[in-house]
Image (cartoon, rainbow, N blue to C red):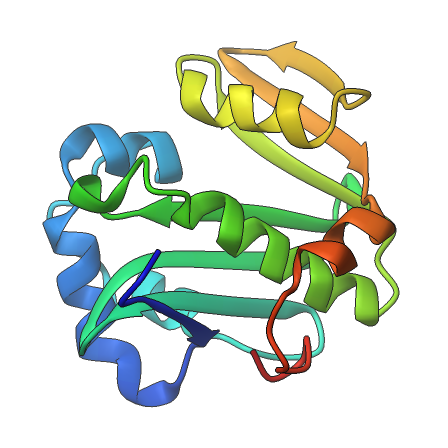
Length: 170
């Protein structure tokens, strides 16, 4: 979407992440974190800012404002597990799929071949996205959540990238 930029999180994003989380509706918070987050805890903010050998995190910015966040974690039910949230007023503009594509490209460069995620059963928008991106995904329903595991379509992920930036520095 025009006027937005995807980039890795930075330590100086702490206050912007806190504002971003506080500005999410209770519904959006619940879909992402499986609970409401009225006042973002310091440990949650730190987790969303963590970049290391197992974790990657990206933000979408519009000016100086963070309007989306995505993170991946190596391990668990797949090579990489992903989670994404977009500010309510920015939803439906393709930012979520762009974040997923960018995260998966970065993960694939580091050797990931499978992707996993836990989705609340009521999160129809994400479940539609999963069906579109990974029609052969394995989906297991358990206690109101859907555990998704799929193969990363390497050709598709690399083809989606249209910029001159490298996947590790987007």
